[in-house]
Amino acid sequence: MMNFQEREGQTPDAAAANLPWYTGLTQQHWRTLWGSYLGWIFDGFEAFALVLSLPFAMKSLLTPEQAQTPSFYAGLAIGITLLGWGIGGLIGGVLSDYIGRKRMMMFSIFFYALFTGLTAFSTSFAALALLRFVTGLAIGSEWSTGIALVSETWPDKARPKGCGFLQSGFGGGALLAAVVWYFLSHYQPLGAESWRLIFAVGALPAFCVLYLRRALDESEKWASAVKAQRQAEKDGKGARPFTLAEIFRSAESRRLVILTTILSFVTTVGWWAVSSWMPGYTEQLAHLHGEPAGVWAPRMSLIYNIGAICAYVASGFIADALGRRLYLFLTFAGSLGFSILTYTWQGDLETFMVIAFFNGVFTLGFAFSWMAIYLVELFSSVVRATAAGFIFNAARLVAWIFPIIAGVMVTTMGGLSHAALIMGSVYVIGLIVPWFLPETKGKPLPE
Image (cartoon, rainbow, N blue to C red; front, top):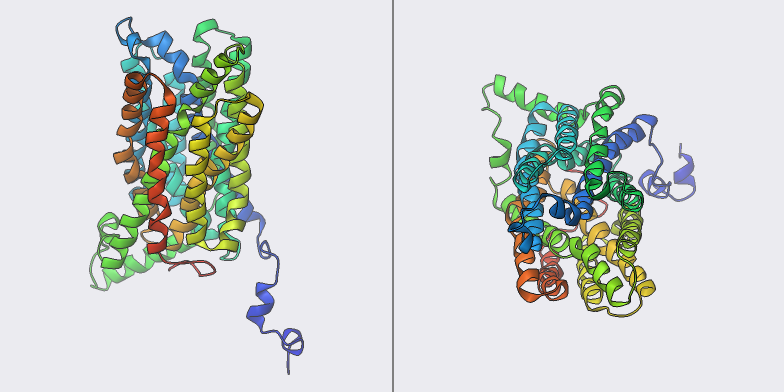
């Protein structure tokens, strides 16, 4: 006897394909997303709080001799943070594949919040740099852990959208930092030392651990894969391979890791060595037009992050519509184009705010979302967090030096625009590499 779909000329698979993307999502799916999202909100807060507060922290902490080259020390602080993120992310991604997604997420959020709060008490540049590095170690594993947990618990049809929503937590955190900084810079409750308060706010995520402990379940895919490997070990079929070595075992896996790490490098350098200078460039542009200091940069930061959040939320839908490779190509093409437009603009500030919005769409929104959507589709459950963590963070181990180079270039070239335009040429690499990667649109996760 034919079922309804067959009588209407549809196969069950075709009928399922026509259902809304959110069909089958339960409260537990949304709780998993929200729990991971909370961690990512404060990741974004931490990253953007550093960018916004650095000029004021430098004035407070640098010695008179160091204050002769503030751009160098600002770049050094960003580079050291990236280095900590890279090392912490590599370690955390591996640990997540061994001790579980949920447990690793709670550890990383708690220690990140602790050291972010301690940053508010920095008494010298050396103390700030050390605390930024240790904070980076703690926060680095949060990205790969959260993305592995959501991708392994959400249905295949909804997964890209869920991963895009999750990535929007980073933009939401950056927007939150911009809002907090807007009020701090306006009211200045501690005067010239008000920059410290934004890091004090960053200590609040420690309380999220209490929620995560209750709300999140461990990934069943990860638990099943690990159980199967442990059983194979008991049956004498060999011990579980070290996950970091496993992702380089086959030629195809090595190829995927290398190519996606190159794209991760493009994304990371593009943001930290190019877009992170936008508040400073906005202040220069405002000064050129006779506008007061401290007004347009916070405004630009809000608009920039609103653009990024819009891109994060839309990224899963756009990647599913275009396919992964075309999505990547257009992402880096847009990042290149708007980076050039941003740092060559000398016109009115109102139009510059529109440019900043689309810069945020591409260089922060789409440019980071691809890693949340695409990387999990390339590797199996037993190494997924390790692979994602390595690709996302190995790029930082190389890219951390580029904000320092950019800071030196700003100092030697006498301005931001030349340094930013030179560094922005990294996006050209992103126009080529995607075409050597596989298309995974519509395919289930590897087991």
